[in-house]
Length: 401
Image (cartoon, rainbow, N blue to C red; front, side):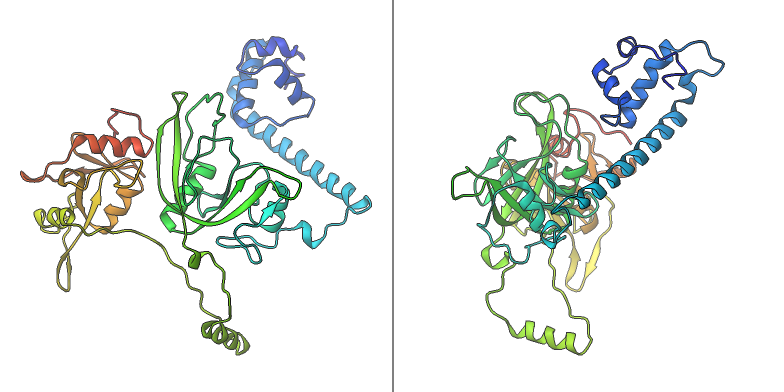
């Protein structure tokens, strides 16, 4: 593409796009690989300086970006394969069992106890405590977060057993250039809040002659997450992590009858059962029970009344959470009577209620109707606004269906 446009100088192209001449030189020299967004910027600049052509580059942007990314990734894979072959040929270059993480999953790592220290991030990765060599969050948005590292570079509030963890994405303490998004590691932590799966926490500590620079501090559970305005005017995502009790840290001191039974099952060829748990708090307070009775245990969103063996069943949902830093009141105006499905969607920020009480499903932006109110039960709009901001929507903005 560059040659077809007459091989212009990188400085000339840089003047017509959002890239610097240094970045363009790096791309042309093969030192770095551009993203799809940067490739589009590059093509925009070339479109301005290109020579006369029957088909302008701008009309071919999508096809050109796809082809360029495919070629770059192919070349990158070939280069990585060549480097691995060269590394194996060097003395001591053959991989060993210690170079490969032996654990890949959630919960405690076999053989690693809370308080154990590690000299480097590489040592954390080799043991499987934290498999990311740079990122502070290890995990995927569709599965959850396996582990996090508190490196002391983010604006985290660390109280030992309770951590208010700041998500990833433009969190340089000196400067933040854009809002954080609920993607990648942030989405993984949000998924952990929904599943209740534990997250391994490692802290960076002061180095010394006999001390490692990282310490594994056990398992925590993501109990809540929200967005708020950061110190530089951009939004950040925050996650409340609470340490699990010692009995839930995944260590078994002695064999138990259950383990012996499991061993016998394996010897017979049976598949042993595994036990897992998901934590979800459903409060039952005088205020919550009052709101449910006000609506005769009927969901204020869908109007469905579940009939149980002993009568109607509904759940009381606090719009503004009671826990710090939200400190919502346990008051009627902060409580909704919902069915279990809409309770979960509200807690996860997928159910948005505007000040006019229109209810929108955030997953597909469909209008679900209007929240039902009664004369004795009026919802405080300030708590609705807090809920919207809590889950990443701008302040004082109506969410459109």
